[in-house]
Amino acid sequence: MAPQKTNWLLVFSLLLAGLFAAAQFGKLTLTLPVLRDTYPEGGAFVPVLISIVGMVGIVLGAVAGSVVARIGVARALTFALFAGGALSLLEASLPHISLFVALRVAEGLSHLAIVVAAPTLMASVASDKDRSVVMGIWASFFGISMALTAAILPSLLALGGLSAVFLAHGVGMLAMGLALLVLLPRERIATPVPISYPAEHHIIYSTPRLLIPGGGFVWYTILYIALLAVLPVALDLPVWAITALPLISIGGTLVGGVLGKRVVPDQLVIVGFALTIAASGLVYVASPAIWPLFALFFVMALNPAASFAAIPYFNDNATDRARATGGIAQLGNVGTTTGTPLFVITFDQAGLGGVCLLMAVFCAIGIVCTALLRARIK
Image (cartoon, rainbow, N blue to C red):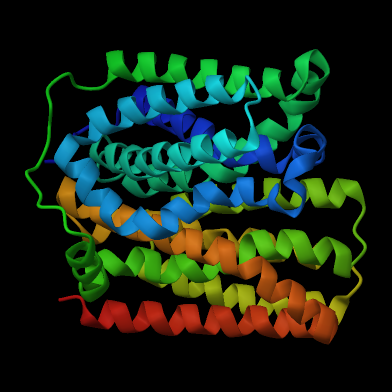
């Protein structure tokens, strides 16, 4: 049963947990040159250290929901925060690269548990009228975290290099785990869900209401990171514009959460993709103007808000919500991993026009997938 009033303290505490989870990516992504200098023996393998966390999500995302439900959502979240904090403290010792790889794999498990458990809990502590806004807030966690991490990192690097970065991240995660240990219910709210790797994939990918959140989200994730990488090069953007794009995305996501109070999630996904198609054409026609990019990243960001709002909208109980969140985590990592290479190759071969056309194609596929899945939900 939904609460009458939203527990906003818990909502923003869970968002903060999400910021630390996203920083498991950001602390390496935004320090890549320093990481290369620290591990020169790694050579071309060093960037893979960033991707390992996402690879864990691709492999295990679909079963993460059932594992979290079986352990208990609150317990899984606090354990993942403590584990993530401990792993980051171990990374602060800058161990041999082979051990660092093992730590990153374990960190991927921690990350996956957090991004499945936190939004599931957020949906459960939100009232019906606030739930779409709450899920829109959650959907902004990655962009907010990257922006904050980028702002904080220079000071930490100056203070103590990579070790200081990992130490601060580890202490923050441990503190967040302690805070949520106090704020979350103490009882073990768990569901005896059987865990089977093939069965979980079959359940999620054959059940439209479980699949529809990820079925639209994957096409957004193919676009977002890839366009942040390619468009600044294609349009020779100044630093201020590059910095503004993720901030504009955060605004679009929060607006999407508010719109979700009046527009059902699947319709908002379709509208977001349709507007993104229009904006992609505008980017090409108005090139090299910068302002169409702001419109593009704003309307594109409606989709994550709508996709996360679709989880509680189409699924009533915590187990199904955890499963749907596991599906969205898996598909989101697939999109993030595959999008950048596809768009880089397209830009190299066909320039800005090819990038804008491919963008429109993926948006059209997202519209079709969302419409077909919605039609199958009874």
